[in-house]
Amino acid sequence: MNLALLFDEDFTAPDRVILSGRRLQHLHTVLKASTGETITVGRVNGDMGRGRLVRMTESEAELEVTLNTPPPAPLPLTLILAMPRPKMFRRVLQTSATLGVKDIWLINSYKVEKSFWQTPWLSDDNLLENLTLGLEQARDTIMPAVHIRKRFKPFVEDELPALLAGKQAFVAHPGTATPCPTHLNAAAALCIGPEGGFIPYEVEKLQEAGCQAVHLGARILRVETAVPVLVSRLFDASL
Amino acid sequence: MNLALLFDEDFTAPDRVILSGRRLQHLHTVLKASTGETITVGRVNGDMGRGRLVRMTESEAELEVTLNTPPPAPLPLTLILAMPRPKMFRRVLQTSATLGVKDIWLINSYKVEKSFWQTPWLSDDNLLENLTLGLEQARDTIMPAVHIRKRFKPFVEDELPALLAGKQAFVAHPGTATPCPTHLNAAAALCIGPEGGFIPYEVEKLQEAGCQAVHLGARILRVETAVPVLVSRLFDASL
Image (tube, rainbow over all chains, first blue to last red; front, side):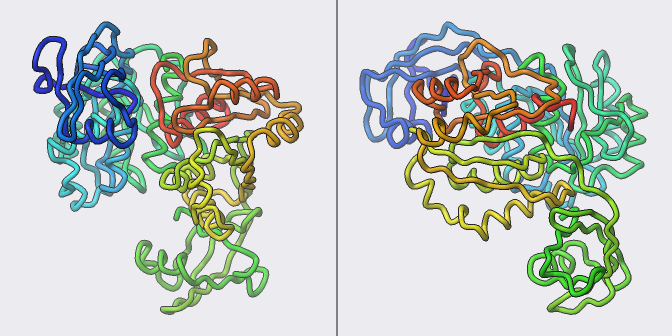
């Protein structure tokens, strides 16, 4: 927790917040913070700044906050992911939030197992918690949006073309001839398939919708590795 | 397992291997392979190719192998990591192997907790197993070397200068003025600190040894995210 993310319900006055739960535990056990100390804070979707601990008990901590610094610029990326295996999903979500991705679409694909959609990590509370952890790691406040689309064809035919308008769009597809570009400085969209990849029909549909197939070299990466590698490669000028 | 990595002791003849244990389980339960099918194989530190299943039982699988394809080019990177927290270490090791890193140095730092060095993941068997998993994910055969240095100063003063000879060398240091370069096409060395970063004394010592301090932007990344982001950024031309 390199920043404590503050939500509207934490505020008791414009410059006062009360923390409990996970953030309080972190203050007690990891930061070993005490009254009078200051920590880095940020208001969700707002500015960052400093919070001075004015009162601290076992059950809550009260901070006086000054918010005057804008968060880092968001990455201009629409990330479209075949729903990952649950144990990877949580890390991919946190990592995407840490990297500054603000628009995440979870889609179906032939090789996405039906059971992946049953994971409790897809609940609103768990999505919020993991995105928060990713933002707190990075020191960012802008909460990403997550969109869930459990049917591939309607998404690709009816929604994707509008989503890609005005953007360069790519689908990561091992074995294709074109390497993934670098140094983008404009809005882009990136589709990443499941373990085993998109099937040829899916790649064709994504190409019809406007995505260019690109590869990352000879190595086959896990989705949790492919996300930071691709983001870093596309936006090396913006990081 | 996108490739089954074969070791000398698996060979019963120049073109015959017998698999048991984890690789056999994977054939049975994930690939659901049966006699006559072929899978991708590679000999450790040697060529890759195909293996045809000539016999398969509950306890072993025999394959006839043809090895005729070189593995992907290694990354010309010396990766110097402050020993990560055990739960991250295993993933960092696998990811580094997957990305093609062949030379990994685990070093001490002020913010490395003493207990991190006690992890069973540092045993020879566990290092080999996790590096193997990373190579099998990538489809690579060249086993990385891991060097353990539990004392910072002797390493940095006595070994590091020779290790950096002829290489561009960097230490990832948030808050410094120079952004991490891109498009390297020569040998390089990269130092990545622990959670909370190297302390100023350590950064100075690394700079004295020949490392340039570089940053990755405003976001603070976990080491498991920083490794793929930095590798992708430095070697975007080689991936």
